[in-house]
Image 1: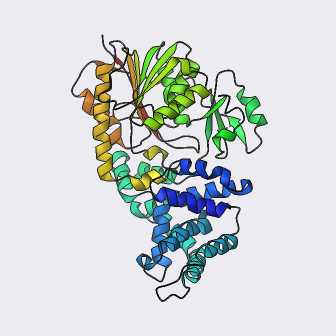
Image 2: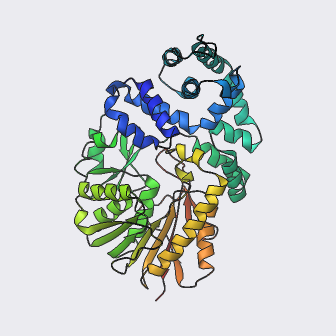
Image 3: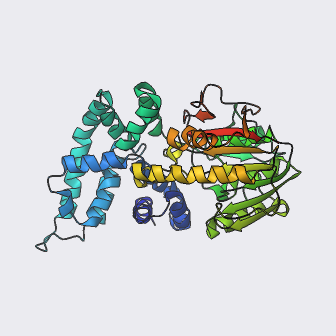
Length: 444
């Protein structure tokens, strides 16, 4: 499979509800090795500003978009993304390849027409869209800048209410930047030596976190040197920061990971704290199985047990001295890394997420042993999922004392104090996701 074909396949699966990263992994082995990077890049530049590409399609297509064959639309959107944002690839080659994809489509009379339309639209976009996008970026209205950066209008409005116009515009711009992979090096791994031996792209130890390696690309994780042996693990630096802050305040024992997902944070904790034991919950049986595989890869499976089920009703097998609640959220802080998420979120879904987060956090505090610590975190930069959730729970109880978040190398220039609880990290670098974390100790 060629790179452009792989991108179209992945985008089709994402349109039907798949996650881009998982779809790319499934298609990886079937794509020509030299064109895998093209597939990945085209997928992500399409999804990152999908709202803008749809807007440009309506603006520059001389036919109503609703009258086009669905396959034509599915080709035009990555085509528009590619001729605007794809680097190191000749636009003419991309246009010709996409035109070939719709050669077999006929119009309602049975005559060919879609291929010519694709060619015309993409050449018109190449000629006129850059200046138009530049005018959107310079426009004073937030909605125009949000459109240019690929941020849903409702989200930009929420950020304006949360942070003020100036900071909100900064967040909008950050959401459009390209993201790269950061790796958590396991204990005993020489980060400098690993980075020097990684020849696929530039790699350097992070100056912010003692276990992070910054890679200037988005490699296929199983192909990373030492991955199968558990030496390195893909993990965002903001996520590492939250776990390091927990470890800096906890002396070990039984920890409950209430929404464990695929076990990335559990694996981090067990790798760096030899006397920790974890019980992990997740509502998804598939994620529980993935977490179990992750513990085996890291050689820490003897100290972890994962249970499928609803965290609102499950009971831990032992009273935890620490709880990690990485709550399901909008993912707004990771929209650069997982851009499909922003097009699936809405103002109504945000409210439902916040309601669930409040119930989960309240349940977590009930389960925590007196004297124990709890860290509540999200990969969101919406206050409704962060400080407002914490504030709503604290308004009904007085048994929690906030602790300072501290790790060996904190993100001092990225951090913003929550209003009034916790700390927010903005996605200021390609390796740093938007994140919120707050740490409490439960009174005896």
